[in-house]
View 1 (cartoon, rainbow over the protein chains, first blue to last red):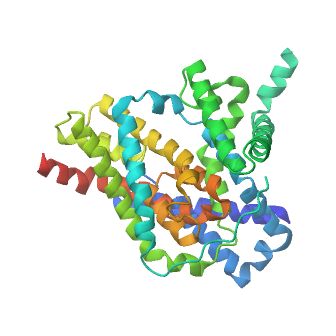
View 2 (tube, rainbow over the protein chains, first blue to last red):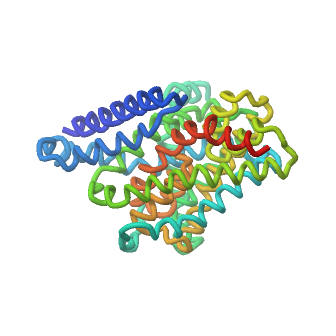
View 3 (cartoon, one colour):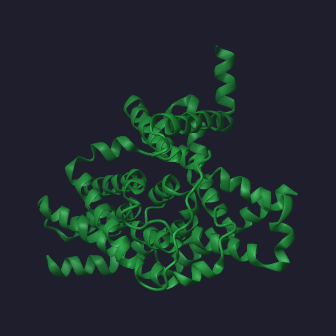
Length: 129
Length: 252
C-alpha cells in the first residue's frame, strides 16, 4: 500500500523534527538542531533494515519515491515564495556580506573535500523532468 | 469569472501543482531548445521562480513572493517549510549508510568551518561600513551565516532592529545566491560526488539555498548536501550569541 510508505516518511520527519527541537532546548538554542538531518538518517536506517522491508519495497516504496520525485517542483514553489525584493533592496552592505560569504564558502569546497576517503564522481545525468 | 475565481481560491494547493507543473514544463522546454541542454531545466525553473517572486514582491509589497497574490496563495503552502522538509527527507530514500559514515568527520569540520568563514565575511563587511559596536558586528556576521541565525543572535545580544533587518537581508542574499550560483560553479569546485556534496552542504548551510542549488546541479546530490546543511543553522544559533559574540567583544 502506497500510504504505508508515505506514513513511514511522515513518521521519520515528525520524529526527526521532535528530536531536533529537544536537542535545541538541551543546547539552549532557539532553533531546531538537525531535525531534518536526523529524519533523513531514520529513513536511511529504515530503508536498510530487513524488518522494515514491507514498508520500503513494492508499492509502499513508491509512496516515498513519489515525494522524492516531487522534490524539484517543491523547490521551484519555494523559490517563488522567497522575499527576493528584500534581498535586492537590503542595500550594499547586505549584498556584499552575502556575496562575500558565498564566494569564500564556494572556494573552500574543493579544499575540505580533500579530507578523508574520496568518493568517485557520479555517472553523467540523463535529463528528464 | 466570479465562479472561476472562487474555484481557484478554494483549491490553492491544486492550483499550485498546476502552475508549478506548467512552469517546470516551460523550463525544460527552454533548456532543451534554447540552451541545447547546457543549462539544466531545474536551474531555469528555480530562476523563473525567483524572478516571479521578485515581480510579485514589487507588485504586492509583501514578503512571500507569489504567495502574496491571492490566486497563487497555494504556492506558499507547496513551497513552505513543511513540504520542503517532507521533500528533502524523501530524497534520502535509497542512500547507503556507508556513504554517510565515510564523510561523517569531514561533514562536521565543514559545518564548523562554514559558520566561522561566513561569520567573519559578514563581520568584516560590517566593519568596512563603519559599524564599531560588538552587537552590530556580531549580528551582521551572524546574518551572513543564515537569515535565521542573524535575528536569533541579534535578539539574544540586544542589537537594534535596523541592524537585525540588515542581517536578515544578508542571509536572504546568501540563500538566493547559492541557489543561482551553485550550478554555475559546480564543475570548478568538484561538486559531482556524495562527499563533496556533504562538504558543500556543511559550508553553505542555508537549507533553501543548498536545496535549490543542488537540485539545479544534480538532484542525486541533494540528500548528501541537505543532511549536513540541516545542522548548520543550529550550530550557528549556538555559536553566534555565545562564543562568536565574546570573541568580537574582546576584539573591538
